[in-house]
Structure formats: structure tokens, C-alpha cells
Length: 218
Length: 343
Figure 1: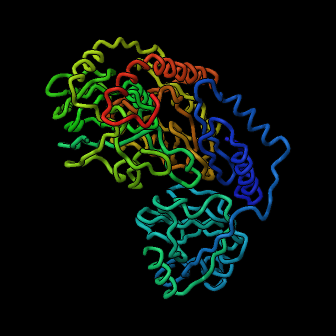
Figure 2 (figure 1 turned 30 degrees about the vertical axis):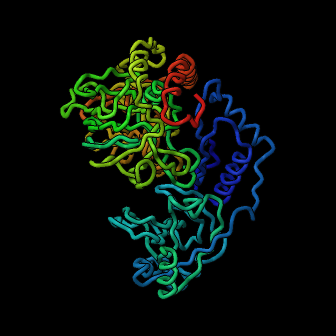
């Protein structure tokens, strides 16, 4: 594991993503997976006959980083995620607004502000962790998680957003839903989102949601 | 040319070395729980380890060979029989067309939990993201993302020719002298070797001592995703929420309840529980053969020793591969179709 810090902090997250990119480009022998998260980077490797050993790999990694880790603000794909906020798609929007002391429209405005990044994809295939949102969206997770969330549920907690793959329990606050399919093993790439993607949430109405969802499943 | 599933067994699924290169997209690696047994069975049928074997759990399937084939079994002794006669494990065996491979419906305890069935040339499976492994929870990979079911017909990539030379091949396979290198022998151990986890230092002294001195029971809630253990309470000095980060096969996490979970093949790619230890990869096959109700202990080792064991193991696999060249050559000449892979 390569560690960059201890707290949920956009700079630490971006550094982690930039480091992942550098390592991927270096294409070190024996490395099978490079998995960034908010504060750390995991380098999975398979010691084949003749190496690499742990010490050797650590040395190679140090070499890749010896000239620093350039954090390019504009690196990463720009991806627009349409979201139908509130109503039946966002049962927790009113509560989130109340806790933050702002209106539902203001919650949406803060959520759709540009600058969100995918820091990690995990928990389930294609399931993104996106942040870091404005402080007012620092609502805690719900006391009682829901047993089953629908696919595409857009939920927030602790200044982050997750988008649910569906069929799993979840304790985050659901403020809306996206008609996009986040994961499809038959698609290339299977996961819609990858760490480092720059996200723009855009509000859509219920009819547009239905139309886009029908298109996605066609 | 195929194998027909007459009975599916308790949980039989195709697994190879796992799906590499997609964990950053949240896609679990899956793959064989006992990689050692998977690789041995593969070697003994002349297959690369990237061809799936059938991972058989506790109660094995009944499979009918519809064409002659060379197969091998490794891992747990689940009382395999071919045409009613016991099958020797860790040897290439010839099945004739019509032969049925069966397993005991009441396997004896303490003989292991998972067996691996390799067939020369491999099974006809569509790779998903470069791997033939089944990710059961996600319902993709392997055989349509699921376990075997009654009536399934699985294609064989390299069935053998049913001609007058089968008997000679059978005799040659039975005469084959096989020596399993010491580094690949599954010797039982009193305790599984571990390395300190990323958050080892955050656990209190008593918990760390308990962790390397106590027996832990493998609870029934243990499966391909993880082994949930029951034992003395394991606590951090100060309970801290940690941010989710990547996890590995054999990572030992401790949720707030104080009972450790060892993450296994189908683990989620990331997790937010503190990591107390990492089971050394050399002992993961041992763990994969323990069943719910059995106990496990841990003993600390260091990374230099763990790496030394890894290297010894890899050299042993390479040596065994070289020694089995004559077998691969014999099988290649008896294939129905010309080989599409080098021996």
C-alpha cells in the first residue's frame, strides 16, 4: 500500500489518483491491479518465478515517484451524469435540506456544481465514490440503512456521493436517481466510471429520466 | 464433445487464477479459493493455470464424460470414483466416453472442503474481462455466472480420439512417475502464517496477543467472500472510522463487533474496516480447505520469510511443469483436433 494521508481531503485524493496514473503508465512487471482510494493506493502483484519481490517492487515504485507526482487539475475524462432529484427518486432530499438548513433547490445547486471527481470505484462493480462536495452536504449516514436500494440511486453522506448498483443495502441519503447503467459485464469497459473521472451532475425531470432509462436498457 | 452434469453437487463453479486488472472498477477478482490445488490439477493435465478448473465444494457433482478425456483432481479428498472405482488424486486419469465421475454424498470430515477438477485442454467457457472465473454474486463469468445445474452440458476444448491408441495412452499415464516437490505438498500446520496488517498498531496489546495465541472458530457464515471467525474480542485502542481502501485475498478485517473476517476470493475490492493482519499467500490454500466448525490459529511471520516461501513455491511449479513435458506431448498427439496452444 502507498499512503498519502489520513483524512478525506481533495488534495490527498487527487495526489492518490495522479500516483495511480503514473504507476499505470510505468507498467511495472508483475503488477496485476492498481486500486486507488481516498488516501491510499494499493498495488496488487503476483510474484512470478524470479520476482518481483516486495522489496524490489517497492524500489521500482519509489523510482516512479522520485521526481514527484504532478497533479494535473484537468486530467481525467469529463462525464455528465443526469439525475432526477427529489420526488419518488429522491426520498431523502427534504431531510438533507432540513438538516443543512437550506432549501432542496440549494442542495441540488451544491450537488451539481462542477469539480466533483471519482476518487474510488469499489463496494460493488461500477459503484463510484464521488466528491468532495460543499461542507453543507456533510450529512451523516442514516441511522437505519435501507435493506434494498434501486439501481441508479444517487445517495450522499459526508460530502461524498455514491451511485448504487441496486439490490444491495445502503445507509446513505438518497437525493435522486440516474437512468444510466453503471455496470454491465458485457460492455467494454464494463464500468461506466473509473477513478479520476471528472463528474458533472445535471438535473433532469421525471419524463426525461424515463426516456433515458428506456434507451439505456434497449 | 462434452461433459454432461447428472447431479450438480453442492456448489460447483469454474474458477481460474481470478480476474486481474479490473479491481479499480470494483470488480472482484474471484478465482480458485485453493490456488495451489487449482494449479496442481492444471499442471497434471497439461493446462496453463489460466484455464478454469471446476471448483467442487464438499459434495461433488456426478459428471458423465461424453468423449474420452484426460482429467486430474487435486485438493480435498471427496471420495471421487470413476465408473465406481476410486480415483487417485494428483495424477492424470483417462476417462472413456460414457464414464461417470461421482463423489460421496457424505464426505468424511477433516479431509478438506474443496476439490479441483481439471480436464486436458480446458472447458469451453467464454472469457469475461480476460478470465474464465465465475463471480457468483455478480452473476457473470464462468458458466453464465452461476454454479453447475443438473442437465448442463459443458464442452471440452480438447477431447481425445477414441481409437486403438487410447489403451496405450492409459497405460503410459498409469506408469508416469510423479514426484511432488516439497514446496507444493499440503502439510497440515498448527497455525496459519500471518503478517501484520496495515492497522495492526491501532489494536490494543491484549487483542494483538489474543490474535496470535487463540483458537478462532470458522462460523457457518463463511463462504467464498470471507471466513467469519469467532473468538476473543479484538479491539482497537481507540475505535476509529477509517476511510475505505483496497483489500486483498487473506486480508483480516475487524468490524466494530470485534470478530475478525478473513477476506477470500470473492471479497469486495474495497472495505472500510481496520485491517489487523494479512494471511501469507502460502497458507491461503490451507484456509480454503477448512470448513465451518473447524478452528484456526495464527502465527506471526515476516515479509522476508513469506517472500522466500513464495519464491520456493514458484520455482517448484516451474520444475513440475518442465518434468511433465512428456505427458503434454503424449496428450497432444491423441487430441481429436490439432492443438491450438503450444504444449
